[in-house]
Image (cartoon, rainbow, N blue to C red; front, side, top):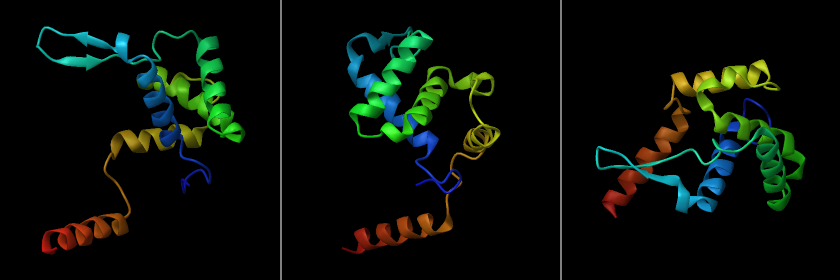
Amino acid sequence: MDERSGSLGLASLVHALYVHRAFITTTRSFTYTNSSRYSIENPLSHLTPDQLQKDARSFARREGLGQYEDLIERGARIAKDPQYFEHIPGLTEEEKQAIWDEKRHRFRQPSALYLTIIVCSIGAAVQ
């Protein structure tokens, strides 16, 4: 649960849909660049808005997340073109602010999380 929205986090749903779509389209997602590196295209970038909506809603129903269909659809629209999330219709100001906060402060996490990671790391090293 995301503390900001009181429901599943929008970023988590965006990531789940993006990863799901990437696995489906792996054979056409890889491109070879001049720098001898592989890059992964955004698998949602080639979808029409109607196809994106249909895919997002069917993903939500198939995974038992029917009550979050609207949220997943908004997340898919963000994942399709993340640089222009401010111009996506249907996003609340709170959601836009949460995305801005995520972009500006990528590694801002609760101090309890860092404490847990440090304690577990020390425990693993001692073991």
